[in-house]
Amino acid sequence: MTTATSQTYTKPTRRTAPGWPELLAGGAAYIGCLALVYLLLPLVENDAVAGVVGFVVSGAMGMVALAVAALVRIRGLAAFGIRRAKARHLLAGAGLGLVAFILGGIASAIYSTLSGDAQNVQSDYQAGAAAGLLGLVLTVIAGSIITPIGEEAFFRGVVANSLFNRFPAWLAVIASATIFAVAHGFNTVLPVAFVVGVLTALLFRRTGSIWPGVVLHGVNNVTATIIAPLAIAAATS
Image (cartoon, rainbow, N blue to C red; front, side, top):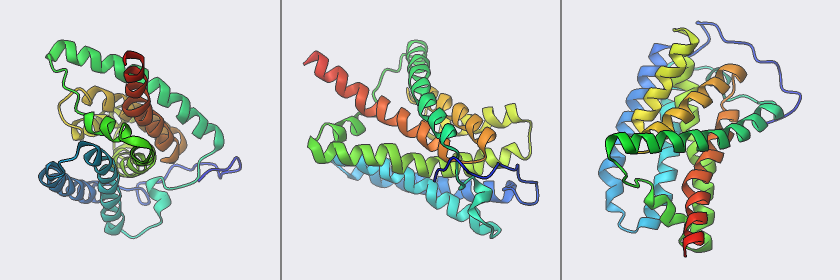
């Protein structure tokens, strides 16, 4: 995944980069998976189990959507950003993950104030992390590895990638981040997802690889949904 001697990124051309066919096919697959999740996930009655399953399913949906997009025109996965990243880019991703946590928290607080919506829609994830050592380990693995890989593979490797090759960079960043945010629903997570979407899209634009964004995404997820809530709970108990 990483090496300090990674090859220099060469921006793909319109002929080699994903475009509208991949975006539409992958998007249709993702929406189909999302519909199934909304129907089936509520059947999981245990909050802790639902949290772990939710993280895993989030990653799986992205991987399925990437697979469908890749099958439209058979090519190497490097065209979708599945390529090595330099160590400094991964470190930048880790640092930006903390930045995303801070900015996302501010954006979420503003959203809650303006909308009056203060519902904690990530309580299942926090329940999973609080369900003993096994629950914590599974939640960390699912939230910091599986979900980021799947979501970055689709939302950056397919969505942002396709838009970067059709529109000005600033518009592609905003559009792809908006799509990513809306996919998380109209709730307190929406502004957080938008912040993450902007930063990961910029990283993808700079590096041509999804892996720095995966690191950013993972750091943000584990900090926002696991570390911070557990720290607050411990401090107030």
